[in-house]
Image 1 (tube, rainbow over the protein chains, first blue to last red):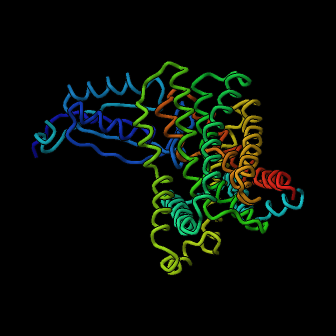
Image 2 (tube, rainbow over the protein chains, first blue to last red; image 1 turned 180 degrees about the horizontal axis):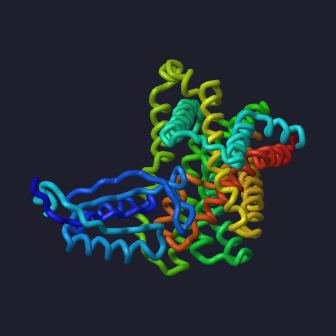
Image 3 (tube, one colour; image 1 turned 180 degrees about the vertical axis):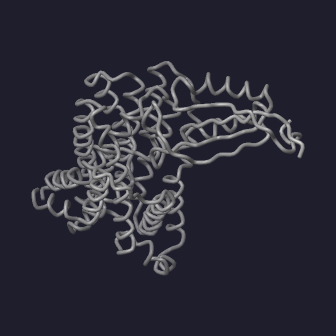
Length: 100
Length: 324
C-alpha cells in the first residue's frame, strides 16, 4: 500500500493544558488529534489535576513545517512553568492527503 | 471537647478516611477507579444541591439575608488574610502566596458535608439553606486571590473572564447551583419520590460518603511524602489559618443569627481549603506558583485537620459564643 512520510508529534502534559494545546494545534495547522489520559511522573512532581497525578498524551500527525511550528509554540508557551514534554517521530502514513 | 472529639473520630467517615491513608502508607495497590471517584463526587454534589433546593423553598428571605451577607464577607476576607500571612510572615513569593490563598479563600464541599453530618449527629442540625451559602463561597475567594497575585506580580497573563468561566462551569458549581434550582422548582411531592437516593441525612448518601472519604484518604495519603518538602511554616499555616478562619466563620455566623449547627458549618466552610475548583484555576493563572505547596497544604494537612479535629473545635466555639 502507498504510504507517505510525515511527522508524529507527541506532547505529554498536565491535564489543565489539554484544551489550550489542542486549540493551538489546530490553529497552527493540524487537521485532527488524539488525546489519551495517562499517568506518570517527571521532574516537576505533583500535577494539579483531579484526581491528582494524571497526564494527557496528545498526538498529532502533520507535515514537517507544522510540526516545527507546534514544537516552537509548546516550547515557548509551556516549557518554562509546566510539566510538559514533546517529541517527534518519523511515521509512514496511509492516505497521506488527509493530513495536508 | 474530648467527648465531642472522640465521637467525631469514631464516625464512619473519619475512620474510612484513616483507612485510606493507612492503605497508602503501607503501599497497598488499591484505589477507587477514577470513574467511580468522579461519579461519587457528582452524586454527592447533586444530592447536596437537590436537598438544599427543596429546603430553600421553605426558607424565608429574611432568614437567609444576613447569613448570605456574612458568607460573602467570609469569602472576601479569607483570601486576603491568607495572602498577608503567607507573604508577610511566611516570606513566600507573590505567586506562591496568592496560589495558596486562592485555595484557602475557596471552600471544600466535602468538608462542608462532613460538618453537616457532624452537627446532625450532635443533635444540632444546621439550617436547610446552608448549601445555598456554599455556592456563594466557592468562587469569590479564588478570584480575589488570583487578582491579588496577578496585580502584585505584574503578570496580566490570563484574562479574568477565562478563569471565571472555568470556575463557574466546573462540576461543583453546575451541580450545586443546578441542583438547588431543580430542587427548588420540583417541590416537596416530587422530592418524596426520589428522597431515598438523594436525602443527605439518609443511609444511601452516608454510605456513599464513606466510600468517597476512603478515596480521599488514599489521595491525602499519597501526599504524605510531600509533607517534608513544604517546610515548617506552611505546616503550621495549614492548621493555624483554618482555626482563625473557622473561629471567624462561627462568630460571623452567630452574629447573622445562625443556630449552633449553622454557625459550626459556616466556620468549617471558612476554614476549609478547596482542592477541586482552585488547583486548575491557580495552575493556569499563576503558573509560577508551586503546586506541591498548595496541594499538599490543602489536601494533606488542612482537609484531614478539619475532618478530624477542626469541625469539633468550631462546634465548641459556636456553642461557647451562643452561651451553650
